Amino acid sequence: MQPRIPRPTVVAAAIVALTLVTLAGLLAPALWYEAIERQEPGRIVAGGLGVAAVLTLYARLLWLNLMRRTAPVHALGLAAITALCWVLPAALGGAAGWGNLLMVPAGLIAVVLPLRQAVAVTAVGSVLTPVYGLLLGLPALSVLYEAIGFPITAFSGYVTVWLFHIVQELREVRAELARSAVGEERLRFARDLHDVLGHSLQAVALRAEVAERFVDRDPPRVRKELTEIQTMARAAVQDVREIVRGHRTASLRTELDGISAVLQAAGIRCDRPELPDLPAHVHESLGWVAREAATNILRHSGASWCRITLAADTRVRLEIVNDGADRRSHPAPAGRAAGTGLHGLAERIAAAGGELTAGPGGDGTFHVRASVPLATGES
Image 1 (spheres, rainbow, N blue to C red):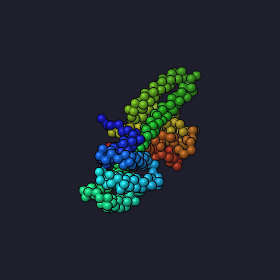
Image 2 (image 1 turned 180 degrees about the horizontal axis):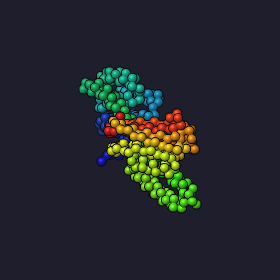
Image 3 (image 1 turned 135 degrees about the horizontal axis):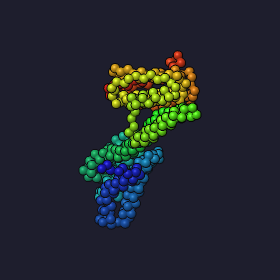
Image 4 (image 1 turned 30 degrees about the horizontal axis):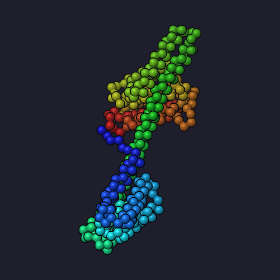
């Protein structure tokens, strides 16, 4: 089971709390010594207020930098913590644990200061801190501990904040990828819906126009056209359902059979080839091309004939040509040559490792050419 990642503020609060607990454990022996052993009220109050001030300011600076609310004035806060941590051992004596205060500022150096300054300050602090400990009369073992622990503590503070920010950036990237995936799925759905309904509704409209022309002259023809309209409408409904389920695929053979019948009904002569056995991915990719090309012929051109050719070697090439390039009854809007679907088709064919081109041939014809690899995985 994948654990749930808490909100950034929750993680930051946990880091601050754990840091305070660690510092409190580091300074507890000194406070215990003052309260239990010496029992001098003045020293207890001074030590307690000093530790409280250090922990409060430390927590504030750590929280602000975790939340990326950095500011130059934070360097003054680090200087104040350093001053308190150096003054208290001198005032209360370095023995009995007060010398541990000298380690406290190290954890904030790389958090508050820019990296280059932090490296320089850490290097200087690694030298001055044990020297100051010797001047305070700390035991040699404590001085050695501070000399080794000061750079390690500074590095630990830097890594803690760095990892926190890395996690947040990964969280933001994951959210952005999720939004991008949703957008891609919406575009795919819109493209599939356009490809399916554009052709089907155009075919239904064409059959309805044919039925209207023959309504007074040829009732049997009208009944036939109405039957075809019902069949097409039911097929369109089924296609939409399959798109919603994400299972719909196009078949080149089925599409060529359908567009041949529709174009013939519109009075457009259609020559189509016999299809050899082709892989499923070829049928699906080129089937969408055939559907979109037929939709554009019906919607945007005044063609009288359409020719479909197919060639296969290492790649399968489909070409659909019509003579309606100069006789468009419904011109496409500016910026698109033959319908919005061609742009989506180009993306679909490119994803399959193929190519798609569409445009006028210069002699009054309009050409749509597509090719895809015969074998999957080729590009």
